[in-house]
Length: 111
Length: 114
Image (cartoon, rainbow over all chains, first blue to last red; front, top):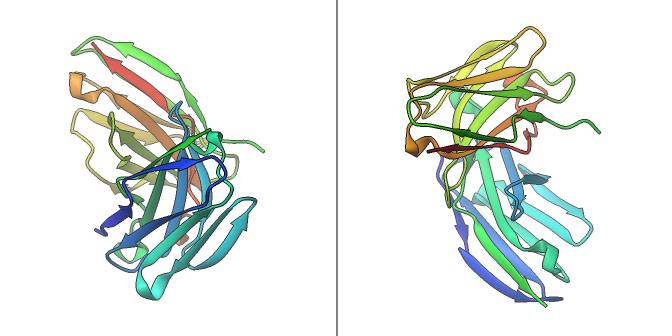
């Protein structure tokens, strides 16, 4: 199966700062999703982005499928952005859409 | 908008007991996935169903079984529970079966095995 690597593993930001999280994947994917896991454990779907660029408020994401990476941008960070951000990919060529998750980036936004 | 529903949200069991987790996918979604997330870990795929048939199997122990019913809800049955089964169990659903698509995750069931 595919391997998913995320960086950085930990990130501490001052409220209002911007950040970029990176996700590298080892093989072609046709499903790439970003999630935010809040302190209560809920996995919130941020983007479905196997290629291209999408924006949703202060968040945006870009996937360059040919180079096998995706970036998540967080602008004007708020304390409520704290939590773990996961990138997950799937490749249907193996007949499966099971998502393989990266280890996550733990984000702490301090006032 | 309707989301994936999981029940119960919290479950406490003793070692060697059994547990049943339920998942109700988003209406009209035809595919259900189960994932297990241990403490401090990333979610790991267990099993999936498309149109009530098992479509894929991951690292699911033989002590676990699952099925999808005619109304598309799914149940994960866990027997001979071990301490290491303590985890957050997520169900996700999608529309599009073998064509993939966004997987929407439920709130999870937190299982604690004592």
